[in-house]
Amino acid sequence: MTSDPLIFLLKTLANLYLFVVLLRLVLQLTKADFYNPISQGIVKATNPLILPIRKIVPSVARVDSASVVLALLVQLVTVAVIFFLSGYNAGPSQYFIYTVMGVIYHFLDLYFWAMLISVILSWVAPNASHPGALLVQQITEPLYRFVRGFVPNLGGLDISPIFIFLGISFAKQMLASYGVI
Image 1 (cartoon, rainbow, N blue to C red):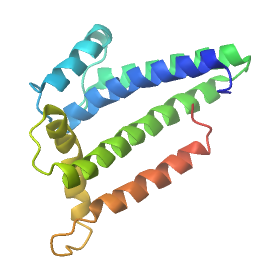
Image 2 (image 1 turned 90 degrees about the vertical axis):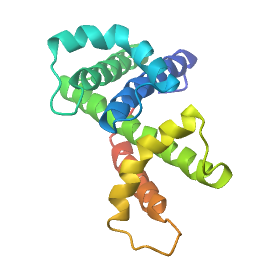
Image 3 (image 1 turned 120 degrees about the vertical axis):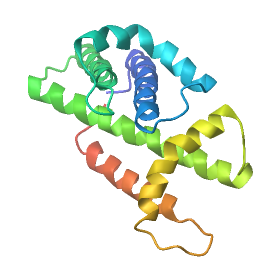
């Protein structure tokens, strides 16, 4: 399906925006620094679409439902346009599966890249104070903390990223069987 350059361009642009929307959701879930300049940029990029949705869809607990709805809408529109351009006729259940599984896949992908950046930063600049480095640390630390509860301490060697990478890779392969777009 991706041999068409127009579809490739559409998928790339839509996935980038979906990445930003999911990043906003993750920033809220992890209670990352709202005043970080990168956080502010993400909020400004997503506010035009999230604020109208927020008037209709209330937040549930700590989850910003408007961000979830926007992520699902972005993925649904992407799937619909790709199916249309490909000439593929799909039923409502296929749209639902591609949409939900696609958002989950991209959510896992976001964490994969955040983890990779975190691991590289721990080698190159362990005490970096750059806004991007601080944001990556704030996003990944809750996941590290959770996995460290199950992984034995090896005397200063943190192997929790290995288990997280394995889990993310396994989940992404499971989702790939659905043909995620």
